[in-house]
Length: 462
Image 1 (cartoon, rainbow, N blue to C red):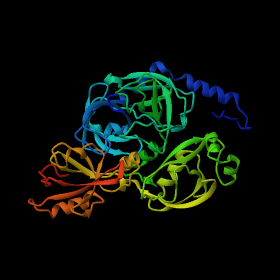
Image 2 (cartoon, helix red, strand yellow; image 1 turned 180 degrees about the horizontal axis):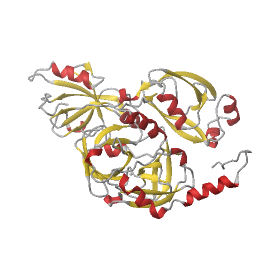
Image 3 (tube, rainbow, N blue to C red; image 1 turned 135 degrees about the horizontal axis):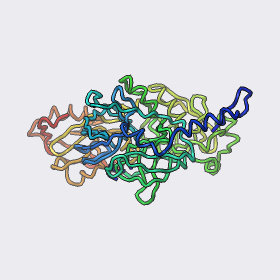
């Protein structure tokens, strides 16, 4: 997923479908045309030139091109993908349709979902004011004809047509790097390629119904992120606030009713126990549990969620609403586990507390806190100091493969980067630094090595 690659009929006053209402709807639809979609969106689409400076969390250094679009022209807010912004130090420049260039200030990236917000200075635009593209998640429906408008292969204003198909796809698996989770994705088929990441997926009215996020290199399938949690975060970003985000340190996936029955869950019984099947295609099931996290020891892989705080849960948006509103509080989960129903109290942790926000650069080594993203891929606890890269021999060669975590230094535990820095501060230059290192994919074994002295050369200390 590299950047360069990823109806209910209206009713009349009598409660019956009205001919006049239907005619008005048809007239409104006929007033829009796909032939004018470029003219209507031209000023709102931005080509983003990206330059990532170093390894950090799931991302590596490099440069590329992507897409963003204006969602608030007055404040200069641009929506794009998380993997476009990247979690680490980076530089981004936006280019409008008339080649006006603006500096894009990173504003917010979601710790899990593949979206981010930039800001630019509206005063830098001369002679035009872009129109904000409206976000309408409720208008995304199976069978909807759409246009994906972006900078495909760095070609400005490329337009690709398609039709929304699967609305409840699980998040795509991109491998050992960044992966989204705990959300639906929309599947469709288009001819878009690299550079179209962050493109709006618009209906004939020019409203965004989804965000282009990734694709399959071996087919025409593209993966679109629904806008529900984007709209939630956007309301906070407009107020210059950080949206609350919670986690139980568990990864869920969607399964169908038939799959749930194979696990032994009777759908009718699930409804009696407080579940929901109406207007739902299945249930949410626990797919991964982060060791030593809030859900560890309370939930198990294979548990099927019936309700949270008494509210029936069958889809990701409704689960996210409850979890994000309960940060640092307990939620009550009712699950089907091992052939029986049970209820568990789980603490919702602040998701930002397990998202690294600073790094330490030691010569060629880059160290930062273990992240939820890395822990979820490896099913490892969020503990220790992650070795993002080492190109200058801080640790031996075998520990430079982006899979290792420092668990202790000079015999003292290092649960996070701050503790490791305190240990380094008390080490003289002529003293060795003995590190206990574990492979996050094999925590049963540990290695004890003598590292080079951490000579921090400014300005590389962050």
